[in-house]
Image (cartoon, rainbow, N blue to C red; front, side, top):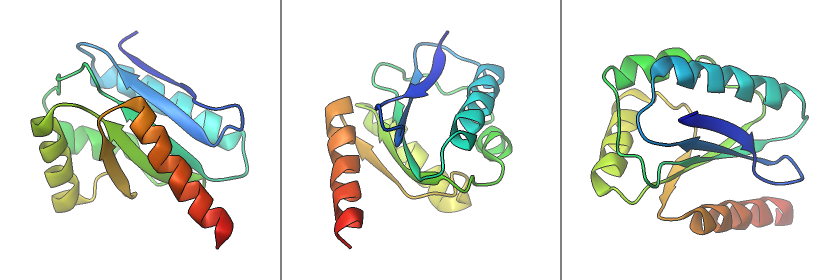
Length: 130
């Protein structure tokens, strides 16, 4: 399947959402529903890594679809790190969110999965030390 979601660590504090090749908004809806069910299973904040490393596909209707699929924020939403090496995709996502707040959560960009995990680890260490 071109869109998947799974726990990224044993503590269930991080989810990995991966996009491969061409995908549809219906596939994203299925993934988002599964993600909400996963969030309902825990009682703590969960961060997300969206892995688009080899995916440069963005189907039509991005703003409308993301707002519709995202819906209301979940009580366990943490922060989001998008992994992409495509500067144009990163700029578009940043611009879309800046104009519409369609993601409704803080987010950053990373160039690799390791960098994304390190960013989230640094954040969780800062929060634990507060």
